[in-house]
Structure formats: structure tokens, C-alpha cells
Amino acid sequence: MSSREKAEKLTRIWCIKEAYVKAIAEGVGFGLQRIDVSLSDSDSVNGNDKKILAEVKVDGKDIDKDGWTVDLGVLEEGYIWACVSESSERATPKIVPYQQIIDVMQL
Image (cartoon, rainbow, N blue to C red; front, top):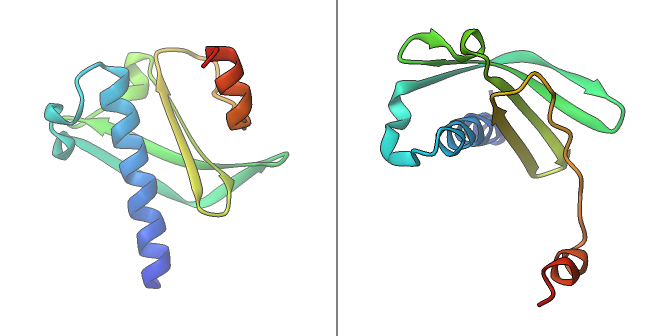
């Protein structure tokens, strides 16, 4: 595995761990070492969205058995997204222009 591939794998794992601790409203103080992430060797591609398959365990227990859904994907080269939720609905990212966010927030 090249150094670039190692960096991408680390980023994917970090994104999932960060999404999980945010989903449970604990933050990194929860203990990232308690979260074990196994990434698949292959990615699935659905339309323009490249999804990365992952298995996540917390304290040795699969979180999907408790109703958690994990989604991880690539928006474009260098931009990875992750979503962990207590929902059976799959996350679908949407790129929103910065100006649209400013307009909605009326800043």
C-alpha cells in the first residue's frame, strides 16, 4: 500500500469515528480507541457518488445491530464524507455553494 493509499484509509477511518461520536453527542472524549472500523477492499459506485463500504464496532459490538446506519463516500478527489445515524435511510450528500448557505442564513 502506497503512502497516499494509507493516508486515504486513515482519513476514511477518522471520518467514520468522528461521525459516530458526533451522532451519539459525545465528541472525541468518548474514546476513539473504542471504535473499530473495517473498510472493505472494494468501493461501490452508485451514479456519481462513490460509496465506501465499512463495518463499525464499538466496544466489540456491531453498531448496525443497534439500528445505526453508516455511510461513507467520496464527493470528488480529496473530499470524503461520512454520516452515522439511527435511521434506515441512506445518506446522500449534496454540494451546496457557499453563497447559498450565506443567503439562507441571511448573513
